[in-house]
Image (cartoon, rainbow, N blue to C red):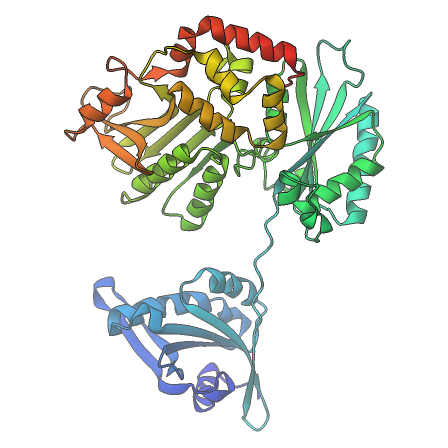
Length: 529
């Protein structure tokens, strides 16, 4: 009976719609649709109504060769049903019915997950007595996302051969415990070797693990371990079984410190499972971004990414990842979110780029950055949006102030917030520095703000370009435009002599106090970058 032509099978199914769903009633076979302005037309195999009154497009495919056309036709007829017959989008469903699902399962599963309309599949059987039976097709679930979690570790070795053996052992252990996805970077000591016993390192990032862990309920585990308990337990197992000179814990950002240290050099990458270097999907820059945590905001202080608001699925994750990196800084979080919403509201394809460094630790900035490397360590945001008409918005976020300082001074306020260097180190180890940092920034009169320039020409900004001052006022993000009268008042209130005072200028006013505090902290604690 499977020798029936598709037209004959359609008519047979139209008489037995209840084999698909109870309550289906026939509207018409070969239901005609057209849209003359678009110069397109089509015929729905079977149009039915379900027991809730929804219109049901039924697309029938009998042969493997024609089954590939199903998604195209379902999408086309759904759009034409809305345009030609004025049927509301939320009152349209679709069923794909086929005797052969080999070519259909993967694409229909993908469309069923992402399409706004309800889409289902049925595998049809034709019996010798011309009766039909049908079984609903179980769509493929979403493929679990594989990414490098913030659970990282460092293994140190005395030779490249020991490191190779160590990596081989790590792979064996990971396979046994069910942690198949690992990414690692090789790094080596290239100078100042006398003070270090092991010159060869392996920086290890643990990919997602799909088994549970009792650690999620353990009060002894906090930070990244509590957020990723299975991965944390996997790393503990690896560390316990693998021999090396020294094992150190790490987290997103530590690799960035190694990259910035002239004594160490990254020499290569290794990966297994989803991160196998030979899979062809990723490049070396991807491996680095994954371990740095910049591509997901997992470092909770740094993020680099770009997206187009019109590509909705990527845009939502892009915004979420940016917000993750802004954790602990409610002012910048509100301002960046509002800026993103504003640029995304413009028509057409828009290229948006974000670079965020949000340490939420002014003491760290001073210790490591003052005076020569402040640009590297001070909190900063660079946000750029390029619009289809050639215009662009460039926004910069920084710590600014409307004062060059005054009594009682930087040293006084720093000691009000942190009694001594040990107090600061305690907040760092406990992951609560951002709370104290907000207090310190407020006491010093500094403020997280964003300054935007919108231009419609290439090259540097011109006096005619629109300026935008982004502030948090009354608990919400506010944009003051230079095109509006109130801009001048907002500018006067937040600048000194008409100029935004930068963190460098502010600290320079307290140069002696800053130098004293920096020496105190460097001498009073074992501070490592």
